[in-house]
Image 1 (cartoon, rainbow, N blue to C red):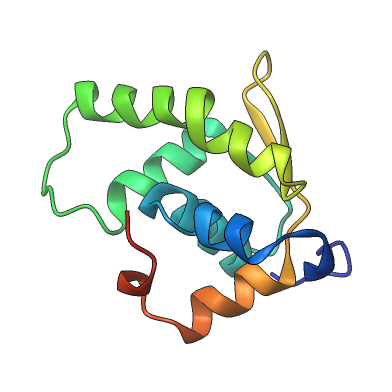
Image 2 (cartoon, one colour):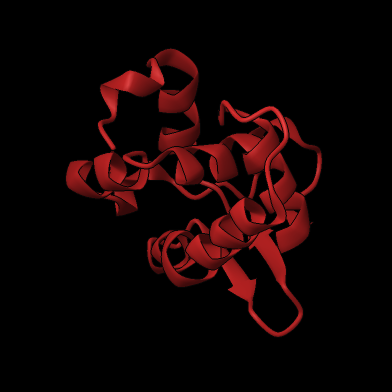
Length: 117
């Protein structure tokens, strides 16, 4: 997306950048917004995107979707929010993406296996 809202990369340390890109679900969230023309999404949209991209299951179960949802609420969205990349409202299950140009650029130029999980 790299909108005018994308934060400058000066706020994140190298360790934070590597940490944020160190899990496939956080990479998928950033990629989702980078590919879309909006800066808002529902958690359901993110869950479906994550389940359908990158995971090798042909027919993911409801249980798998729920594990992804729980991981978003209890791990990945808070980490991205703490870094200032997005904000999320657990009550309305909505996410607003602020972005970070360094994260977006690294995801485009570096293979995901360079960021160990």
